[in-house]
Amino acid sequence: MDELEFRRRLLTDPHITDPALQQALALSALKTEQYQQAQQFEQRLSQALALPVAPDIADKILLRQQLAKQQQRKRQNRWQLASAASIAFVFGIGLATLSVSPQSVDLGQHALAHVQHEASLLLRPPTQSVSLAGLNQKLATLGAQLNQTPADIVYANFCTFNGVRSLHIVFASPEGAITLFVIPAQSGHNLPQQFANERYQGIGHQQQHWQLAFVGTPQQQLRPFMQQLSQQLSAI
Amino acid sequence: MLSRLRNKTTSTTVTSDRMNKQRRYEALVRALHGDLYRYACWLVHDPVVAEDLLQETFLRAWKALDSLNDEHAAKAWLITILRRENARRFERKQFELSELDHDTTIDAHNLGPAQQTEQHLLRQKIAQLSPEYREPLVLQVLYGFNGEEIAALLKLNRNTVMTRLFRARKQLRDAVTEPPKSWEQHNG
Image 1: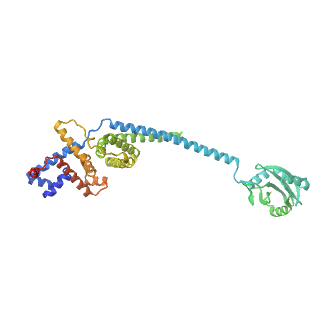
Image 2 (image 1 turned 45 degrees about the vertical axis):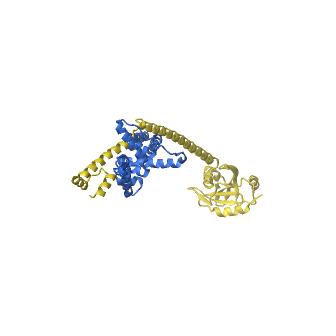
């Protein structure tokens, strides 16, 4: 180990000892002295760098952390409360909106249920118990009139059709009783072109501002009857 | 009933996790605050600012404690946070920086008068070193980091670190050892 390397070693990292250094020290009394001086200087250096530390500083750090934690928890609680409140608010609004305006009600299923509920009407004798004039009087309140009836009218009366005042008519067609609902068209109320359950079938038809729902048994041909009727139906 | 029981166990786990974290943190503070404070002092030259810096550092360490996986890396981790905080302090209040008195960190110690003077002198000389020489020296002597570790911490080349360590020691030794005999020749 040459002089330069030895000096460099003592000034960069005097703590490291390796065989090369040991050998250099063993060979030279001067180097040993320089090495010892370097070690002494190192000790003085580490003493000088070790500034006194106030004994309470760790407690101060922990205190500050505890305060910060408390504040954070408080903030978190506030945030939790706020989010709970806003979720409740949104839920409330959503519920209100849902109950006020039912979205896209299926009138077809409603018509089927209605017919099923009043099945006794279909068993009435197929004789004309309501005149065309009588029917037109009722249709007039919906702004419609029927010029000619394609079959005898067994029953005609108002009913509430899912909250909408509608006319419930039963015709005695040659194929059997056919029920017709004349429903004023309304947005959100959706009448499918065809609907059925295990006992009845039905077809829907939109004409001007009415929705017409024809309901009969699965064996009946409803479409020809609907065409005949819709030709005769007109606005006042 | 079952879900209530389950809830209870989760909440106790959460609490014990929190307590664990708190315990880890307290151990970290108690074990490492001394050297970190000294490091801060040598970095900023003002015990009051150093204490502020230390507080900020440990507060940040608390928030990020979950990211410390290896407890052995804690020293280097804290130093990195402290250096970042210090840089932030410079950005924040550069206008407040004035010519700091380099003597502010130097206090008397429980040493004999002669030793005290000597230490006083050495501290003064350390404080007067340029920061890029002082920082590696503090990391080496105070923390016992080797060249590679210091290089990684300061984001420097290892050779640069070794050169700076060399120059720092040389300047200090030249400053505190007796003036060379050659001065007589100059006088003569």
